[in-house]
Length: 591
Figure 1 (cartoon, rainbow, N blue to C red):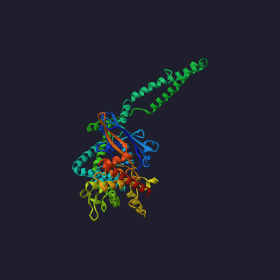
Figure 2 (cartoon, one colour):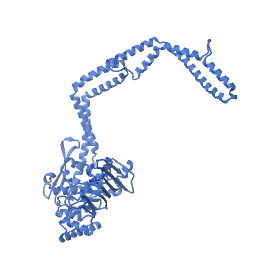
Figure 3 (tube, rainbow, N blue to C red):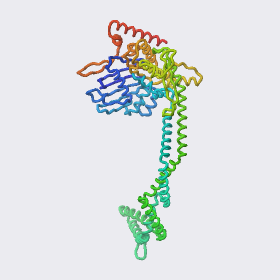
Figure 4 (tube, one colour):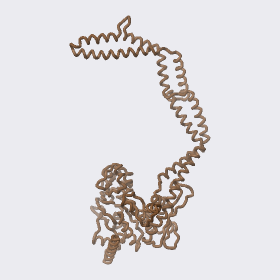
């Protein structure tokens, strides 16, 4: 759960630090006091895009810190990312300066925005005051159902893209068939012509080196003879080998009298060994080297072929092997692209992969849909829509789309005996808000399995698993999502006895998860376990927002204000609401 939230220089908040408890927490206050700033600040800490407008006027930067208990599902990710856990908590910190530059940290280590958002998925679920709007968008509704069903959307998107890419390649090949044929013929001729040369990868360097050696073979042999004469003894002179050996012998004879001469003798001895090695190498060279006019003529011809081919291709000789490989690759690509039958088979195969995955996704959606409908229908009975019914219709698309072969539509019957119709056509704004709240509650209750360390999943999945195992499961069986749920004026448009129901629903939800709500409804605020009041003050000609806990008489006065004013009757009504909520809380706790 969220333990602590600290803000500094955020919009109209100079400095603020709040500690939170488990259960149901509300934020109330006059319109414009800054209640939503707290939600915006928390979303900023969780990785939502922000700019310099978040910085309080006159300040250098805005800073938000949020401390949460670490859920078990997040621990492996933190360890893998190098974000060491601190006392069972995870600390998120983020700043943005007046230039719009943002920085972030997780447990004191620098983090990216994507890492913040990935962390947020395990910590908080925020339902905004316009959450009902997404209920009228098929894509958003399908995403909701896929989340409950555990659909592998990544695999579905990958196979869809593979199919689309295969169709694009096939279509391009069909359109460019004539042009591709001409290009293929041209490349085939070029490959055949240059292929006659068969240029090896290193051949050009090798034949040039060999040609140079053979072209100067006599000069090489003459030079070796002269070197051997200088090294070896002949009739005319004593060679370097003999002379060096004599010098070594002379020094060795007297080295015992002076150590310095012994060192010189060692140097000459090493030189003698090297001279002897050189002498042997030169003799070996003479035995294996001789002029070869025939091979030289062959090399002249081969070099001429290379030069001629390079001139025709307008490239240097050294570039010919790479050029031939390039042309062969291009020709192979054109041949494959012109094989329409093979491309059609590839497109059909990609289509079958996508349709198989889409069919699996469709089956999951159809299996989960009635479970979700039953749970939301039950929740509606406690939110002023008694007798109403909710349906989740999974209908086939005329043609497949990236999301599969289905579209999903929400339908509702506002009262008993009526036929469910598309939600956008029959529901009022207040009903839409209540339905959004019902869906949020149904998809956000923690699961009983979470207590045993089971991974966070949705309740509908638990019900399905139990059914497949032959067990029975109540539609009210609990399931797990994130540990903290935040509702930002999602009860807008609700009033009267329905407001009482909304407060009770949130209170009940707070028994198994930390629930926070920004609300204008006194009935909802009266049900809270923790109550904060947001207010505005004018300090040094600057408007600032402050947040303080509401307890005792302060809370009675705030609830009275929300009811219409701090009159005697309003205060009495507020006390009645708070007393009734406290009794229900005690009774619920006993239950």
